[in-house]
Image 1 (cartoon, rainbow, N blue to C red):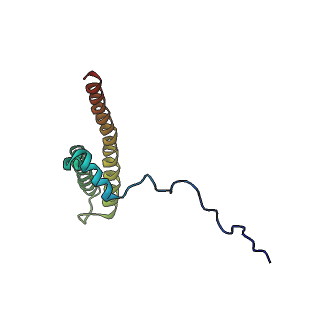
Image 2 (cartoon, helix red, strand yellow):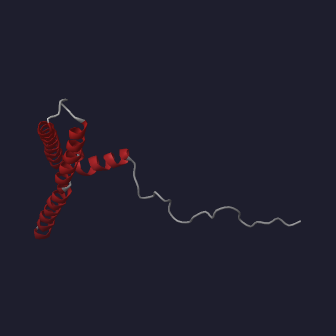
Image 3 (cartoon, one colour):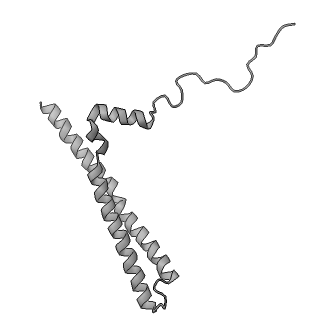
Length: 125
């Protein structure tokens, strides 16, 4: 009796594995340190710090101002009425998000200018 060697089940894909170009966090950190030194781990830190400080200031400023304004306008007996807290939370989230979302655009512009200066330096040298 002859045996049937017809493959059963899903076909085995040929070629490189799906995640061949990806690296884990440890390897990424190792590569950054090799290429840029330990300070390379904090590339972009200043821009993100500015973004977070500005975003937090806007968030709490809008929240407190809106909450206190609504409480005094409606003469709420309680210090923090549910409606004032909900509206203040919505407005501060939207306001901070709009301002903070501009940071990636500024960051990209800063990076492209830096890259342009670096390329010009290499081309002139």
